[in-house]
Length: 194
Image (tube, rainbow, N blue to C red; front, side, top):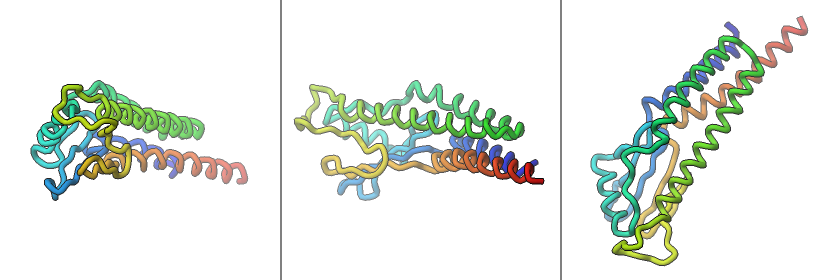
C-alpha cells in the first residue's frame, strides 16, 4: 500500500478519538474558585471537569438568569453518526487511492468543522444572552457568553474555552488527508516520469 493511502486511512481513523476523548473544555477561574471549575464537551455529552463543577456553574448562573447547562442536546444525537460515517468513508477512500476523493473528503471535513463551530457559537450566544428577565441579579447590557476560543473576562470570572485532546486528533486527521492528497499527487507525477 502506498504511503499516501496509508496516511489517508490513518487520518480518517484519527476522528475516532472523539469517541474516547473530550473535544472542548470550558473553564472558569475566580477568587472563590482558585482551582477553576468547568465542563468537558464530548461528541455526545457534557461532563464535569471536576466533580460537581456543572452543579456549581448552574447555581451561579441561576442568579444572573442563565439557563442550566443542558443534559442533552440534539447535536449529541447527530455528531457521533457524522464522525463515524466520515471516518468510514475516509478509510474506504484511502483504500481506493483516489486522489480527487482525498481532496473531497478534506473539503467536506473543513465545511463540517466550520458548521460545527458555528453551531457551537450560536449555542454559546444563546446561553450567554438569552437570560431570565426575573433573575435576581441584572446588569444592563451585560452578556455572559464564553469565548468561542481563547479567554475572556466575565464579571469576576475569567472564562477559558479551548480545544481538548479529541479536537486535536480531529484537526490532525483533517490535515493528514490534505497531506495524503499532496503526497498522492507527487507519487503520480513520479510514476508518469518513469
